[in-house]
Image 1 (spheres, rainbow, N blue to C red):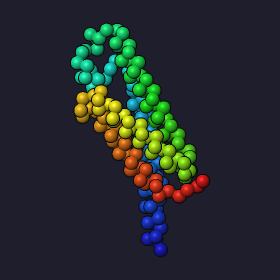
Image 2 (cartoon, rainbow, N blue to C red):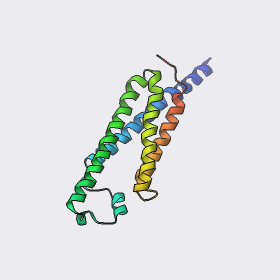
Image 3 (cartoon, helix red, strand yellow):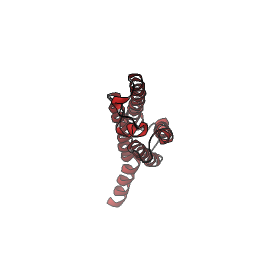
Image 4 (tube, rainbow, N blue to C red):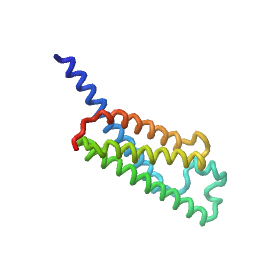
Length: 153
């Protein structure tokens, strides 16, 4: 009698709790990256490796442009992270069918597009590319697990 209950519990963890935890990790990852870039006062070391000029030698106009682009990316990451967290913690957790497809669509599209774009702008193997690829992998795992969730709408 206890065996079916154990299987149900493991199934529920794999198809309900695990995707929620993973999507929260992904959302927090984007929030943290957003805050990091919004609060930056110079380019990151991996950006400096691409332009091969020390920050203090850049013209002030270029510094302003680079920081504006960096902070704009930070705002985008922050908003995507907040959206992922909100959708995960409210409609997805309640079992809403639309949230089950919206979360991987938002998270995978953003992560995949970012990998595509940054591979042209950063040196191969740069930390942000690896982090983004990891977040994308987590999204795919969560999406697979949430495919089996029970519908509530």
